[in-house]
Amino acid sequence: MLSTLRHYLSVYWVMLRNSLIREMSFKANFLLWILVEICWFTGQIVFIEVIYQYIDAIGDWTKWQMILLVATHQLISQIYQAFFYMNVANIPELIRTGKMDFMLMLPIDSQFAVSTKQFGLDNMVNGLVSAAIVAFSLNKLGIHPTLPQVLLYLGAIGFGVAIHYSVMFGLTTVSFWIVRAQGLISGYFNLFSLGRYPDVIFRGAIRFVFSWIIPVILVANVPARVLMNTFQGPVWIPLTQLVLSSVFVLAASRAFWKIALRQYTSASS
Image (cartoon, helix red, strand yellow):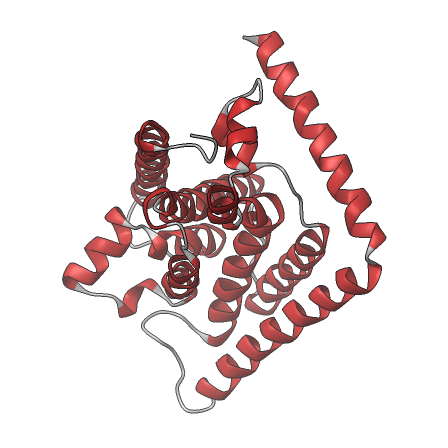
């Protein structure tokens, strides 16, 4: 078990190093994407500022709480994009061109191979910007989270990243049957944009679906509320829901991948 873990870590380190070398070979592209993401994030903050000129709160969310929520959503999104997005988005192309055959021949788990090939350094830089906005928001709110709160926040972010990965991985796995899945990838972004809105605006069946089946509401709302300590009840209830939901979608995406591989006909067949 330990030797297997060391093997996978060494493989990932090689992939990570190659990705960093590739990023530094195209510095202009690296800087441009940082600028694009910062401009997009700034647009979100401006939108919140405009909305809160006319209202005091959305449910129990004040302006700076909303900014903290959006920053948390952006932080989770940037971490996911840094480690997984480029790889998962490339799965349809691997299938279409037949390069998936070579991925399946590697002496490592196929899901690991297709999920960890590239790394986005620019996303990590943008993630640091998001973290700085979270810290600034906490300061404006006069909140000084305890160490347990910070640790729970980081853990919740990890589960949020797992949900991001699982949902998009499941969507792109459909490309084993339909080959071109660009529309599904676009749908993924529209779906996860719901996560930057406060949980109080969702009701009934919509809240159930997007809290349990496709738990996008939990991704940013739970960690943000952990820092602000604004849960209406024990903190372990929403945290348990986040953990169970992330485990469910991760297991479902893994099972779906296994089914897809059994149906896959290689390009050389």
